[in-house]
Length: 202
Image 1: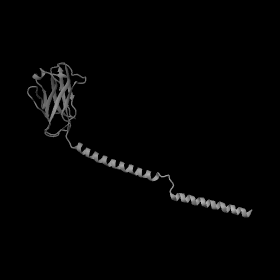
Image 2: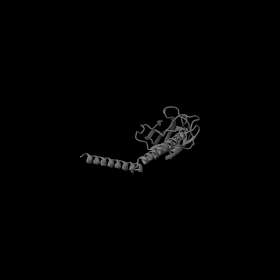
Image 3: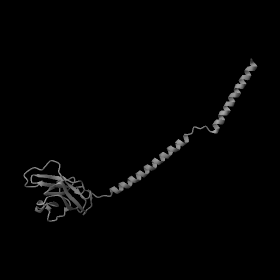
Image 4: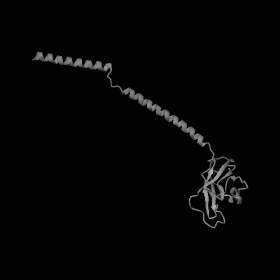
């Protein structure tokens, strides 16, 4: 993706340009909006969609060619036209059609040309993933787990409350008071008998 005829090396500083995708997932044959944008205008570009783990492999999917600003690049790639170069922009909206079958994770790579000696090569997009229903399944599982956890938490709280109520009682009941009176009477009777015995034995 190195532009020809520039005679200098690509920039190594962070790119002022980025690739923005309308979706983070794709289905076979789905159309995705791909926007090239930056803080400064650019007069040329090249873009490809490649498998995430094979950045030097064959491009996947296909771009829509409008004829006035874009033209085909190699196989399934896209580049600018002379008309585009004569009117630089900082925002260009493209359309890309996903392949007919899932190709795993896909990353878009673009080269942005600001001026002849100033350009950035192979700027990556975020990862475009195959669409799956995993997200829905995960949400349902999480909901059930949360419900069960809340139920267990409620049961533990109720058990703690019941235990606390049963043990938090420091007021003597009537049975305790009666037992105390009987013990006192018994002790008094024993003392009286001991006193009487001492009187008779002196």
